[in-house]
Length: 45
Image (cartoon, rainbow, N blue to C red; front, side, top):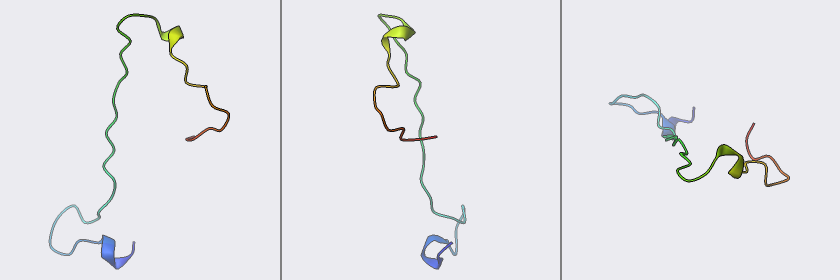
């Protein structure tokens, strides 16, 4: 890691992204109404 991303006097040692994941709950409908393949280019693997 570059020196600017390494903390010297505290933990955690590295500064990075915090990822928060949410669960999608479909209240009025079914799972078939949610379309995850609506784009041509895949953003994530």
